[in-house]
Length: 363
Ligand SMILES: Cc1cc2nc3c(=O)[nH]c(=O)nc-3n(C[C@H](O)[C@H](O)[C@H](O)COP(=O)(O)O)c2cc1C
Image: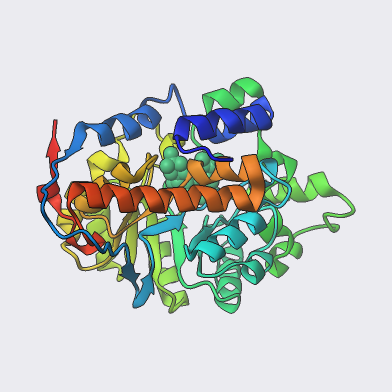
C-alpha cells in the first residue's frame, strides 16, 4: 500500500470501490459545509513548538476507565462496512487487535457483535437506540455478554441526515441489508418477523428499518439505560457544553465530541470548534474523546492539546480496509502512530499527558 497522505488513501480507495459506495463513505450531508469545516478549523490551530526538551523517549499511552492503552487512538464506529470489503468488520477487528487499538463496533454491522467479539481485542459497543426499547436492552445485554467494555450511545442520529450525494445516487446501503448483522441475530427482533430473513430477506430488512432510529429518544431514556447496565456509558455526538453538563448529571462516564464526520447536521459547528468549551465545562471529571476531521498526527496533537483524552479515527481506516483489508487497516494505524510520535518529538513534547493548550495558537 505505502500510502502516507490521506488524499492518496482516498484516491486509491476511490479507484477500488465503485462510485456509489465510495461516495457513501466520503460524503457529508447537505453541501458539506460542516465536513469541510472539520478539516479547515483544525488547520486554524497551529502548533508552537518548544525545543531543547528531552524527547529521546516518547510516551503515547493513555488510560481510560482504569485501563491503559498504548496510544490515544480508538477506531470510530463505522456502519455498513460490508460495502467496503468482504471481510468488513472482522478485518478491522483483527487489524486493531494486532496494533493494540480498541475498536468501537457499530450497531449497523454486516455481522453480529458476537462474531466481531470473537476476532477483536479491546472493544466497545456503539448503540443506535432502537425505537423499540426491548431491542435496545437486548443489544446492551448481548454486548455485556460478548465482553464489550463500554457502551457508546450515539445521540446525533435521531434521523438520517440529508445526505444529498447518496440521494442523488439513490444509494442506501441500509436497504441492501449491509447493516443487519445485529438485528437479524437478535432474539427480540426475530420475534417480530413473520418469517426468517433467509426466507424473505427484504421483508426482514424493512422491519429492521422501522426500528433502526429512535427520534423520540430523550434524557429520560438515557436515565433508564444508565440503570440497565454497569458498563461505562459514553454519549457520542456532543457539541454543546450544556449537553456535556447534563451527561455528568445523569452519571454517564464519558462523552465523545463529534459531528459524525459532517454526515448529520450540515451547517453545525465543527468538532474542533466545539471541543474547548466542552473540555472547560467537564473540567476533567469524565473523559472527553474527540473525532471528525482527524487526518494526520498534527490533528491528533491539536485535539489532545485542546483537552481531548483520546481520538477516534474514521474515514482513514475505512480507506485502508477498502485498499487492502486487514493489512490495509493495520498500515493506516501504524502510520498514524508513527506520525503522532514524530509530531510530538518535533513539537518538543515527550508524553501525551504533557500536551496542553500552551502548545497551540489560533491563527
Ligand atoms: C461511512 C461512515 C459510517 C458511519 N457509521 C457510523 C455508525 O454506524 N455509528 C456511529 O456512531 N458513527 C458512524 N459514523 C461516524 C464515525 O463514527 C465518526 O464520527 C466519523 O467518521 C468521524 O469523522 P471523520 O471520518 O471525518 O474523521 C460513520 C462515519 C462514516 C464515514
